[in-house]
Image (cartoon, rainbow, N blue to C red; front, side):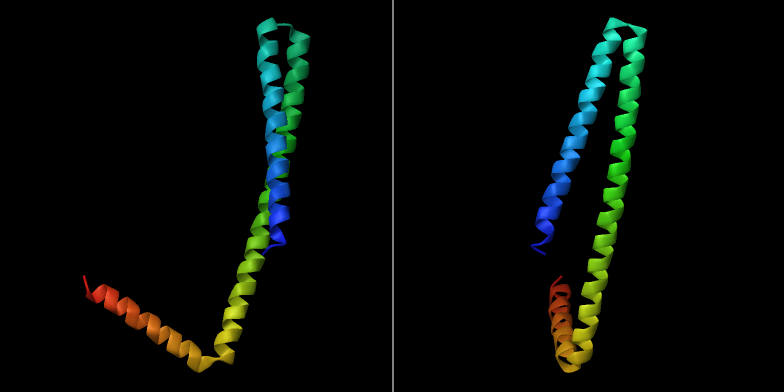
Length: 110
């Protein structure tokens, strides 16, 4: 779990940087529109579209990677739980019964 923190921090930093670059390019495009020089607008528009596509591709790739990591972690945790229940069946039954009693008491008080 601790090994994921630097990865998340790096991803967050990169995302902030991408969004900053994209917003800077769009600000340039807006200010260039005020000048109304057609060649300048076309060039800035192309740069903004290029950065938008790059940022979108990076975000999609990161989203897919994070989804895959979450899915793998969930499978790992489910497998660990399954192993524990198979290795300790009576303990698992006791824990389940205790949780059932507590929930029953809480529901019964209403």
